[in-house]
Image (cartoon, rainbow over all chains, first blue to last red; front, top):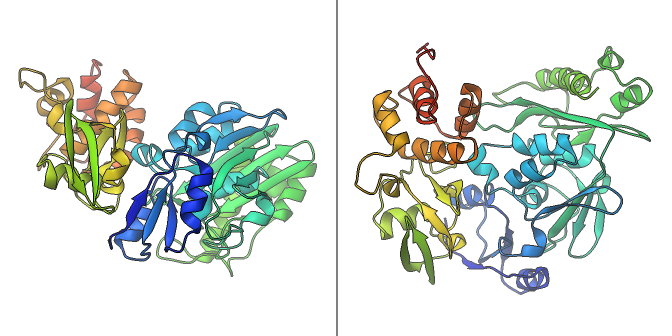
Length: 263
Length: 161
């Protein structure tokens, strides 16, 4: 790792100021991806702005409209323990990485990184969540813009993520056992105005909505509705863990399992 | 360089560190607490697990400055006051929960974190909790058995497969 300075502001405004000065700076959430990245010298910031001391960015609460609000610097273990108002979200958080990773990794860090195999992007897109930053609110449908790409500007910080709570939901992850990331993960959520299906781990474009399955499930919320539907493996991630076609097949399998578990 | 202060195994500890200094490096190289092992250095293997404010973390993937003011517990602080092994450590010995011993500090610290939150875990819960702790010798069976025994449960029915 190249050396860098670390600052630990206690307020969002101060963190934004630290990130906007002339130095090459980067926000630090729980560091469970960023620190390994720095060790590999894939990034070399002059300054890390730790978000760990900002109390206003931590914790889980219920909004006036019943949605579950998670502070951007809230770790996965806390979401698993405290997001009981949205059980599928709590269960998703409870199976990210391993227990020690869940004690450090944060929701804001995960969504800002937008790893194509991470769990939280599927939960956020599958729930139609709102990503709140220091500057604005971004709908999940506009937020995810491809592998490791998001709508965030330089120096913009995710301060909160707001999840509308569905009638039924479930997340099914086919675990890649070495990394504990999703080989394919499917988040299904049934809302009054329709069903959302978000898939992580599969596409070269990162997390995406399987709109064909959404339409079928919106009229018939059962695993049978998926029968006959399939995705092409052409633009799927293909690596030593699985081919594109294999991942495409898993998308349908895991969607069925998620619907069955949610129904 | 920055000054960092924390409590380690109940005693005040401080030192000068760089921004990039990992908690594992601070513990091992500056405090000379080399019981915390660094196996993979990529946050996969769990040999470096310590407790920070009561939570299990991988100390190779946390900056020392992030532990400023924290209460840190390492394997060196696990033994009883008279120096004898604590319940978990003794169970690892009794049930042959280690062979080479490299992963053991992380295993014991993870086990302690698990039993603090879940005093009577099922075998499945123990195995799930250890997903981030890799052992290349034992095949895990005796580690799981040791942790079940440390929780006061009867392990006679847990066979080595």
